[in-house]
Structures are given as structure tokens and as C-alpha cells.
Amino acid sequence: MTGQALSQSDLLALVEVGARLGSEIQLTKLLDLILSSAGRLTDSPQGSILLYDDRAEGLYFAAATGDHATEVLRAWGEASASRVPIRGSKAGSVFSTGKTIIQDSLKSDATHFKGVDRFTNRVTESMICVPLAIADPASTGPKRIGVIQILNKASGRYNARDRVLLQHLANYAAVAIRNARLFNELVAHMGLSSFEDPVQAASELSQPSRMERLTILSADMRGFTQVCNALDSPEEIGRLLSSLLTMLSDQVLANDGIVNKMLGDGILAFFRGNQPPLRAVKSAFAIVNGFLGLRKQWKQDYNQDLSFLDIGIGIATGSAVLGTIGWGKARDFTAVGKVVNLAFALQSHARTAKDAKPPKRVLVDRATFSAVEQIVDRFEDLGAVELRKPDQERGVPYQQYHLISLVADGPGGSKQAADVRSLRVFLCHASQDKPFVRDLYSKLRQDGYDPWLDEENLVPGQDWEHEIRKAVRKCDAVVVCLSKTSVTKEGYLQKEFRYVLDVAEEKPEGAIFVVPLKIEECPVPERLARLQSLSWSSGTGYEKLKLALASRLRQLDRQAGEAVKRGTSGDAGRE
Image (cartoon, rainbow, N blue to C red; front, side, top):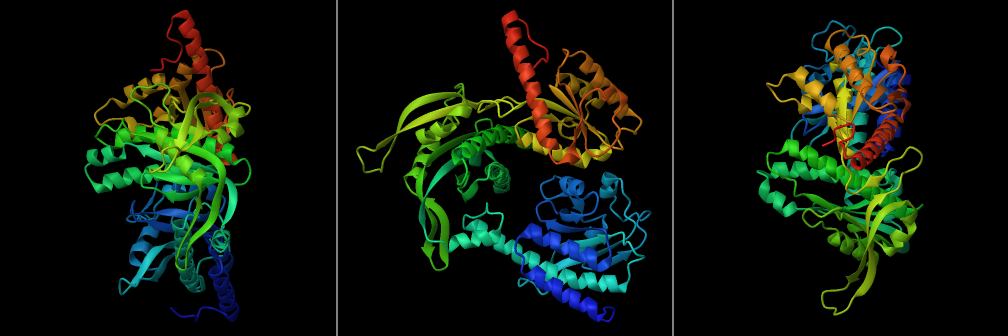
């Protein structure tokens, strides 16, 4: 590679960009900076950075620019189940060979992976794709971590100048991405993973230890020793633990908590700032619902019966020593004090006897209970738990409360219960929208719902049309995913739409059975037009979908209560 195709202004621009990339260690900001720089230097309105996923052996979109960037990241990003294949895609070819490609006509190119084009309904006309590679001390050659691709140049065709510019930029970018990842991993290992700004996280390490009032949450899975004996391989155990710890961390982070420690099959987290007890308790109930969703997923993933697995959570509020413990190179950011020990003690008591109702999963101390009492719907006063050292005859008693359910969370909210039952949700969609629907399926399962998706629930050899009709009738709600493709596509999908609406006509007046979900801007079919639709692109689409499903669950609960009084079985045939 030479700089012969570059002008002096190009070289100065590269130096400036390199300096900016080298000073940014927040990964999301860094990726956006790389793409904005690549687009500006090459006059490209669209671009993306794809990074390699070792476990899935494919590429995911880590960042993207352009009109459909949000949809692409949602369907093909790190958190989704979809990956761009290494074989059968231009990005995969560049990643595997390390060779840059320039192509001005991709529409008829059979080697161009068109899954993303189909998803966005936009044709990629031209592209430059460049490997991201860093020096690898373990080998003689570079280690490739992903690719940068820029698309559809606004002013003519891509040329040698564009290629050389992007290759130089990729060299800067790969090193900057590697450094940002290493820094973030180091910060995470020191108990600071929840800080969005790594600089802020690093500054915490230099602060002296101080007393601070915190809410501590300790969560632990019950039955881990038994599951180690039940599963066949360390890889299976690792996958199960990975999904558990990811869910635990996600729910803490969603409530602005700090994940301080991963403790085998559990976590230690703490909450600071505004209303920490409230956020900790909401996180605990989200964890319970997420765990129930995981347990259903494990039932499908593993041959062994893992129904014995459960979750226990302890929450305590009080003062603790917060800061960096240790000296020199061995330091750890954590909280120390009686309140931490109390959270662990409550967590150890959060155990459910066989067939006990309601399950005893969330225990809190008096300080936490007093702070959240206004949102607690049902609870049990369990008396005192004694906190003492092994050599002490008498310890310090603390009141403990078993939280069973929370009241409705605002207008249209639903009651959250630690013994929540799953709402069965049928996902009606076009096959071209499968990447989006897979992602939606995963979100619903993680949040404790029981979604039905053909590729997940159908068994080889089954009459798929009969099973789909049966699933629609058994489900509590149907989410109809609408796109430009689905509303115009002829064939079985339209037949499925009609069948869903026919079943909906049998439901009581006012029942929220069919929820139209527009995954992109598109016309709504006439028979669905009378129903309020959701727009996923609004940014709050998933939260609004959960509100609709919560309303449906309340309807079913009311109907079940009325049916009990009448001695009948109710509308939905819930099992």
C-alpha cells in the first residue's frame, strides 16, 4: 500500500482522524467516529463496521450509518441472533482473506449477501470493504477482528484514492478498537462495568474510599451443583451460565445499577444516586421474570430436566465503605460493610420449599421495604434474620420481608409478581422479516413471555399448517408483524392473517388479542386498520408492545376470576 493516490490534504485529514481515534476509549463513540470519518473522506452516505463473533463464527453489525441504520443494528447487531455468514458474503470474504474489495455493481452479484438488503428494502449499488486487522503476538501474521464497509458513493464511482484512504483509516481504527475493548474489559474486571464512560470509571479507581448509603443486591441461582452433574459437558454448563449472567447483568443495568461482581452462578450489584431501593427492587422482579423465561428456553435447549433450577435474591440498604480496595497493581472497586453481608444473608434465605406457593425469591430488609412499600402489592413479614459471625453466640437481628408482587407501574402498567405466569404470544410474520422476528422472539423470552415462532416450535414431520392454526387458537395474543413485504406478499401469509382475524372475532368485545406491529413504515391492511398499531421505529415500540400484552394479561386474569365465580373455564383456554 502506498500514499501515491493521496493528496497532501488527504494525508493531513488522516493524521487528524488518527489522533481523534487514538484519544477515544468509549467504544460506541469510537465506532461512530470511525464511520463518520470514513463517510466524510469518501463521500459515502452509508457505512458499517462488522466485528467477528467467535462463538457464532459470523459477523455482526457493531455500528452503522444511513437511513436504515437503527433497523440493521436491531436485526443484525451484537444482541440479535442473526449473523452475516463468513462464506457467501462480501464482508465474510474480506474478513477471511484480508483483501480489500471495490465493487461498483452488486445488484446482480451472486456472492453478495443480500439478507440485509432484503431486510431494509434497499439495494446496495457499490461498496468498498476493508479488513480491520491488528498485530498478533501469538502468530506471524495479523489478527483480523472485522471489516469496515462504505456504500453507495454520492459522487461517482469508488476509486484508488478511496481505497487507500479507507485502508489507512482501517489501520488506525483497528488499533483504536482493540485498545477500547481492552480498556473496557480491564474496567469490567475491576467491578466498574456499569459505567458508560470509561474515563469516569477509571477516575473512580483513584478516589479514596468513603462511606456511602447504598442498596446492595445479591442474586444467586439455586441448583447449580446439581446442574453440573446433570449436563454432559463443560461447554453446556458454560452456555447456560453465560445466558444466566447476561440476563442478570442486563436487568441490573436496565435499572441504572452497577454490576460489581460475577460470582459463579450469581452477581453482586449495588445501586447509588436517586431512589436506589426502588431501582433495586424493580431490577429484582425483572430478574425473576427473566429467569423464568430462561428456564423455558433451557427446557428446549437441553435434554435433561432442569425444572429444579430457581433464583434467590437478597436486597439490603445501608451505609458501606465504597471505593478501591488494594494497592499497586492489585486493586478492586467494591463495597464493604454489614449491609453487603446482610444482602448475602437475605439471598441465602430466599429459597422455595418444594411446591410452595408463592415461591420465596425476593427478600429485603426493613430499610429497603420502608423505601418501596408504596409499590408493593403483596408481601410476607418473615420475622428476623440474624447476622452473626461463626464464632458469635448471638448476632444482630434484622427484619426480613418476602416481596411477592408489585402494584401496577403507572397508567397501563401491569402487576409484577415473583410467581408470574407467561403470556403465550403468537408471532405472525413474513419469512423475509425473519431476522427482526427472531430478535423479537428472544426479547420476549428474556422478559418472561412464551412466544410461538414456527422455526422454534415446529417439529420435523408435523403438518405445519395444522400446527400454526392450533397455536393461534392456544395463544393469548397474536403480534402481527407488518412490513412493506408482508402487506403486499401473496400466498399463505395472507391466509394466516385472515385466520388470525377470524379467531379474534370470537373473542369478547374489547379483548386485546391482535396487536399490529409495524416494523417499518408501511400501509396497514384494511381488516387491521380499525386496531391501534404500534410503530417499532418510534424507539418505544417494544415498551408499548409490553404494555399491550400486560393489558391482555389483566383481561385474562379478570375473565379467569369471573369464570371461577361462575364455575366455567373462561375465554382464552389458558392451561
